[in-house]
Length: 269
Image 1 (cartoon, rainbow, N blue to C red):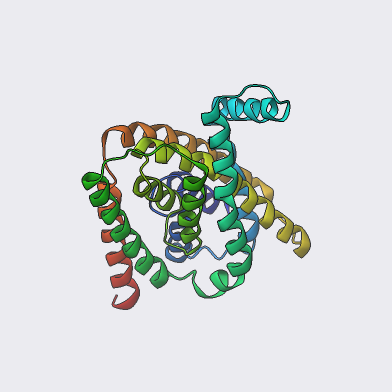
Image 2: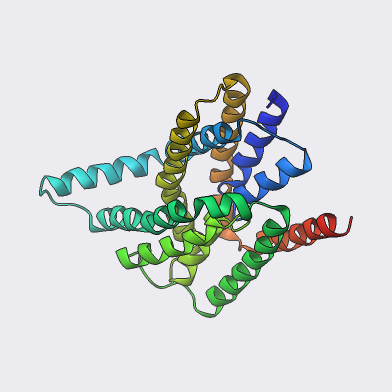
């Protein structure tokens, strides 16, 4: 991987990781379109996931400090804000389904599902799911507080993102909206939930990399990681501002159009 490839993939990762358009799907497409045959793909995936984790942790560092304080106060049998401790429990339990299914299905997904056609079909299916979510949200406005049970159910929605083309942030935001959270509340929970998942994926890929004992050219990867982290930080800020005022419709149309173009180019061009 040269510097251009690393910057391109870092930019794609940073833009798409926290938008409801599937970062994994876009990385598959861009590697295919630009013929990036990266012998160190495992290393780039690990580094870029760590980079986006740093971005979201930096953006939400105040929230993380509040959650950490609530946990320590709870352990010390001191009074805590119940909303804070509920959020922590919900994040923990929401992480479990994707971790278990990810470990069980990783080989199948890597070998058989990371293709342009699969990404296109899943992008379209995800767009239909988001369309239904917006319709349901309009007909049944949000009215439920976040609970541990809600967190578990959002975690099940998150597991759908194991399929390339189905956005993790989109699945969790839509899941939260269907369960009665506002768009902003669902988005905030989705971004906080990204921390253990992206950190875990980065750690898992790093262990796999160490086991393989490959020689890595770190310079382009670190450049790409810097691009991914800075881009992701900006995207988080603007998406949260966007979702306070607008709907998921722009991302629905994006997914429909992109899936159609990919299928046309792959099957008929």
